[in-house]
Length: 227
Image (cartoon, rainbow, N blue to C red; front, side, top):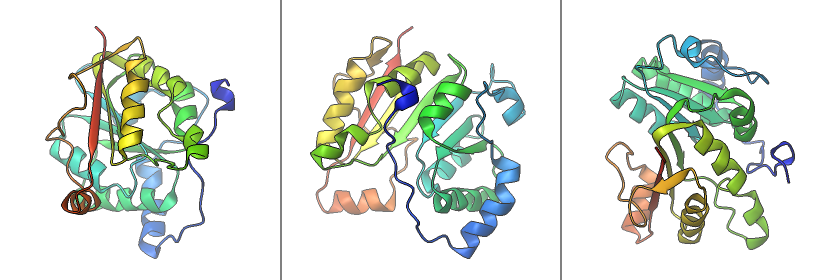
């Protein structure tokens, strides 16, 4: 299967969008949103500063945006490009951007595979974050999981030499798949011998902290683009 025929890892559900989320989506996307185009994106123009001195980090599937906003607020020296398809989460992140007065986040509301393939320049990203993607736990749905060899190749090609691909999940079986798929990509090498300790820059979510109290595991997988 080619990337143009890829199986989508998400389902657009008709979830409830609050009035606040709608309002922030309406007013925030013209300021911080980037429309999908089948053309390479000028990242310097999108963020208004030089990528040679400003690390660019891509996040796929940022959920409700709390973690993205917290990381961006703690690291104003970096630029963050978030890809998400669900309007409530985008509204949530735009609310955080307004509340924290952030200027280093941009958002694309579109399928991540198509954005990567068509818009993100080669060797332009210092890191990629994929935190708690949908695990699609039923075996017949595993083909929908985001972390698959074609996507990992796309990501690796867009990392700068020495750049990092950081995945995290609370499903052990998916964590093992991540380790195997990333380990099979020739452009990548594991940053540690196996699973990585959680870096300080990735804050724990309320959901994650609750799971840890209940004895659930969380696994971080961090690979580096070979130099």
